Image (cartoon, rainbow, N blue to C red; front, side, top):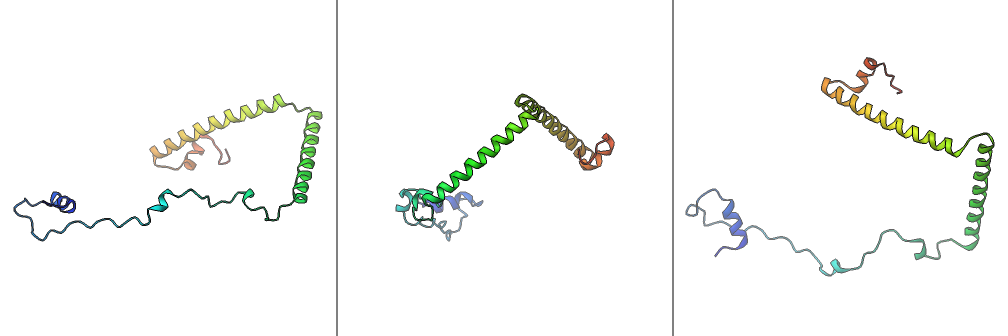
Length: 139
């Protein structure tokens, strides 16, 4: 009876069963996988959470200073919003402009794809096609 390695090698040998060499050797076995107990160990993240080391220099004063800075930043942003509203800008107008910009970008992307496909068909670069369609490189 042949082992698994011999069977695999015999199946790959183009000679018939009577012509096969008696010196066929079994295929080498896989190396052992190492310690099996590591497979079931718990996952340890390489990134340490801030809670894992309380003595890393963060103290109450540092946190209070960061909170104060964030409150100042929040106040400055509120003042900037108030100034823009006073100048006549509205949230609805801003949302409309953003929506139109998204639509413009979608149309421009479709045009760039078509231009790219045409360039491939013609064996050119898209840059070579810009003058033909009255486009500038900044478009």
